[in-house]
Image (cartoon, rainbow, N blue to C red; front, side):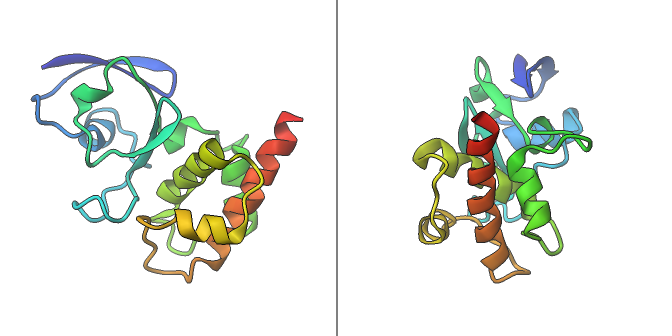
Length: 158
C-alpha cells in the first residue's frame, strides 16, 4: 500500500502492507527511532506520538490511519541545540534513568498540557501517567519534569 504521511512537518511517501503499524513505519522505514516499542500490548506508552496534537500509542495505530494527519515524534519537538521546554524540563529535573521510556513520557506530558493547560499539579500528572510505564524510577522526577515543562511552555508563550 502506498501512502503519504506528514511526520514532523515533512511529507514522506512510504509503501507498506495495509496491516503495518505506525510505529513500524516510523522506526523501520523513516529511521525515527525515538519512538520505542516496549511491550507490544499498548500498556507502556513508550511509543507515544502526537497525532494532530493528541497523544496516541503508535503501536495501536495502523500507518494508513495516519494519512492526512500531522504526526509529531519526539524528534519533531526540538533539536539537540534547542530542546522543547518539555524536553528541557526532563533534562533539568532528571526525569529519566535508563531513558527508554523518556520519549513516551515527554509526549504524555505534551498531551497533558493539551488537555489541561499549563498549570498542572503533581496529583493530576500522576493520575494522567496511568498507562505509561517506567521500570527504573519511582516517577517522582518524571512528575516534577512534566509539571516544570508545562510551566515552561506557558512562559515560552508569554
